Length: 165
Image (tube, rainbow, N blue to C red; front, side):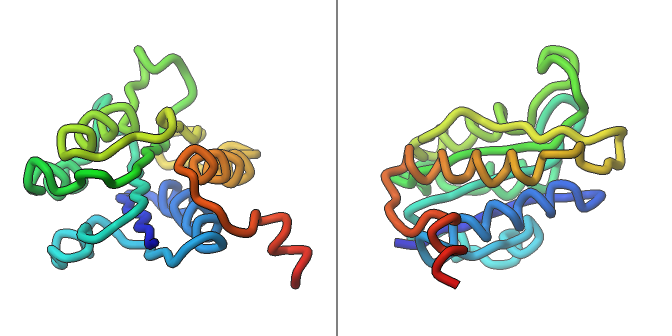
């Protein structure tokens, strides 16, 4: 089993969340953390995955252009049988007002055959450039552990791994 955490980040906030997500997932399975630019250059990056976690900042109520371009370029069934989850960073407020890249990413992944195992997650930033709100890194850890449970991935939980060190 292998996983990919794919992300786009403009100010580093989504990158911090993606790094946290990847650290949690790698305790359970081989995991690669990749930027959207890496995915655009390497067509093989999104192949032979068991778990795909995709995140990006919310831009104009939706997905950033680079992330959307990479995912829409995939063949319609490229992600058949891949378990997936999505996340975003966005301003605090109702989704109706702020938008959510994670919701739109989920729709895009489903159209490519992915099976969404968990509701999309949003991590809040203070202001357009951030920083992340207090507690969002811990929120990312807990959300990722939940995604792994929902995906049926078994492995050492982060708390068990820390105790083993």
